[in-house]
Structures are given as structure tokens and as C-alpha cells.
Image (cartoon, rainbow, N blue to C red; front, top):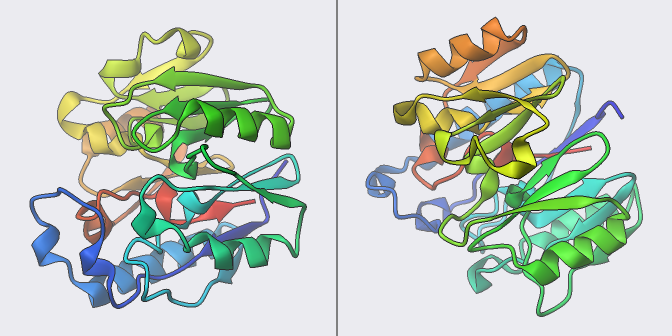
Length: 251
């Protein structure tokens, strides 16, 4: 199904208090982050998506990373139960909007699940079992969304889509660490250089792939695979260990 909308929320005043171990976290500039976010939204709009903007949420520093709040597939939404207590509450505004478009259900304890772990394919999902998503979260997602879900387990990472994303046309972009995982065997794989691992988090809208600026070898690989590429400056989101997919729910 061709996506029509992108749900977004710009960084709030408390954004510099995001959950992050990035060495440059102390240099976060909220105004610069908002400008980068606005450019991101303009590009999505130019690619044909209706932008749905949630109000800023100054109570939750990580609230701009809306992807983690819900998993949308097949005309339904699972509202996520996030692993970090400081993030719980972000999902309320997301749920209110998604209820206008589709049936929704909340993940229930002991489940934890976050959208940043979930790779969307036309006929199934791939989910990480990570620091933020557990087996019960995956089970509830599988049941409510009525979709096959394969898993890649690595409790040492925060989110799977920091390392693997789906470009389309049967092609995955991945870091070397996961390239030989059995779940990825059916796909053609583009393996990013080790020093450009951050570029594995991409956002595909049709045949256009959004990628972060500053990773020329990874960008060239994607272009050589036949995709149009738009690069965006997401430096202020990198400092909060976020990336392109984190900033929207596409549906």
C-alpha cells in the first residue's frame, strides 16, 4: 500500500535531556534541531505525503522520535509500551490521532515494544528483540496486526533499524554485523562500510531513499542500486542517538 501520511512532532524545549550516550549530546542546539526537522517535513511533503503535526511535548525529551510510539500495518496500529519509563506518555497524543484513521490497541505489560525495532515489508514484519523490545511485545504485535513477524535477537542494541532498513524491491541495507543473519537471506543486501554504519538507517518513500548527510560511500551504493537519494542533515538527532526513520510514522 502506498503511504499517504507522515505523523511528526518537532523537538520540545527539553530535547537536550534526551536519552543518549553520544559524546556530543552536550552540544545539542534545539533551534537547529527544529530547522532540520522542518526540512525533513518539507521533503516528505514534496514526496507527496500529508504531514500531520502533533503539538510539541516539552514533558518528554525524546518525544520527537514518534516512530517508537506505534507500529502501523495493514490498516491497524499497535500503540507501543516503551521500555524506558521516562518515555511513557509520549504515545497518548499519537494514539489520539491514529484513532481517527484506524483501529488501535495498546501493548500491555509485560510487553515492551518500540517502532524503531520494526522493519516493514509488503507481506510481513521483521522485529528486533533488543534492549527496548521483548518477546511479549512481538507476540502482541503479531496477534493484533495479524501479520507474520520474524525476529533478529540482539539485546546489546537499542533499535534494530539503526543497523538494517528496507530500501524496497527486495533490497536491504545493513551493517556487516547482520549481513549473514538467516532472516536476511532472501534479500539482496547492500553492506555499508563499517565507518559509515549510521547510514544504514534510511527512509524509503517509493523509489526515493532519504539518507543522512556525510556518508558518501553508502549513498553511492544506494544510487548504484537504482534508487534516487536525498540526503538530509540530521546532526542534532544523531546526538540523541536518533535517525531518519525515528522522526515519523508513515502510513
